[in-house]
Amino acid sequence: MPSAAVVGTGLIGTSIALALRRRGVTPFLLDQNPDAAHTAAGLGAGVVGVPRTPVDLAILAVPPQHVATTLRDHQLRRLAHDFTDVASVKVRPLQEAAELGCDVTRYVGGHPMAGREQSGPLAAQGDLFHGRPWVLTPHATVREQTVGRARELAELCGAEPVVMEHAQHDRAVALTSHAPHVVASLLATRLLHGDESQLQLAGQGLRDVTRIAGGDSELWTDILASNAHAVAEVLAEFALDLHDVVDALQDLGTCAPARHRTSRAHLTTALVRGVQGRSRIPARTAGGLSLSGVAAGS
Image 1: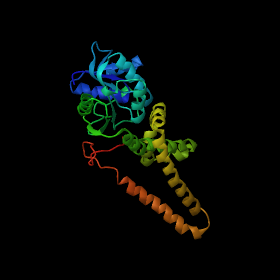
Image 2: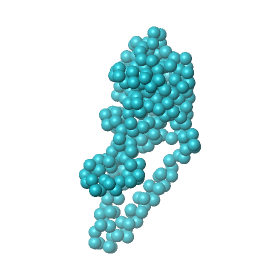
Image 3: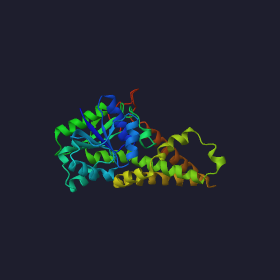
Image 4: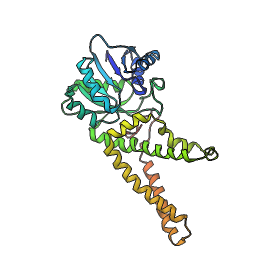
């Protein structure tokens, strides 16, 4: 890939640019915030500005709600021959791009399954995608060359390309990434009601389960809204399970021993099913790649 452009120099965009630089590609960096683009360039991620001639591939590292308009604008400006994005939702951006009249034959959705709770170019890492799945969601009319360039991008970044259908991808990330973020955030919210003496007892377990709650709230609002139906389905089922656990605990906290055995059994079942569910998360090799080939969580 002789030339590339990265539109959006946050965590993911700058990490992609740094990875490309390591492979001999110097990306052109564009961002609505000039300071972010110059910060990324200062890290060695590329050069700020619009190329004189169209590059081979433009990577749209913008939130889901801005993918379609960004694609339209930069296709009109002939920024690149082909386009891909890295948004964590795939159905909505393609639908909106088609509605806006974009040339979707030169656009393929992409989603590298990696990230950090920090945001911005200063949090970027050139090896962020090493050994991680990079989902590509080609549609019926996309050119083979476009898909090929997006696949090459993933490989240059050290990732493993994985092809999925758009709706399949969105259901998968609702289960493995989006709903867990909401649960982590709601659990972290409870800490606002703890006093200092209680919080002094916080251990690594609490830090582990709330780590992702530190993500950019505006970005995550966009992500969740763009995949609202799939996330709501997962959370509705979670709410039913949580309700059963609350009922069991309330029974165990009363002085009615006649119900204790049943409630204790319900509580044990919930914990056992948690162990069973966690065991289904694909193991990773030392390099980070899922042993089963696909891991849809970040």
